[in-house]
Image (cartoon, rainbow, N blue to C red):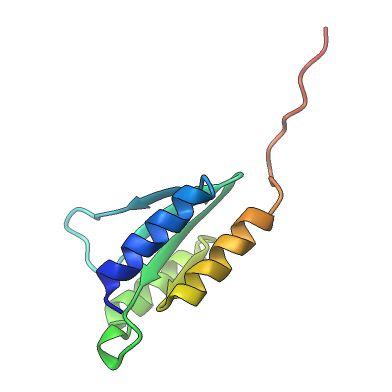
Length: 106
């Protein structure tokens, strides 16, 4: 399965679950993750790869992902539909964290 096919599948499945999904481009920066997702207060970046040898992370991508994770950003590397399905299941199970939905009473 190609990376483009994985992107289409991910976008379609995320839309079904009302997960905010965007393919992102980084101006003049290489090695950054492909996809931004957000759901119920949880934000993460996703690097999609083909499940072949050609789909391995470059040294620059690995270094960039390490730096993002060290900065507290949740980054996932996914190379198949099952990984996408698992991520979506985990996102839709996650309760809202870090938000206050309590109305102020006067």
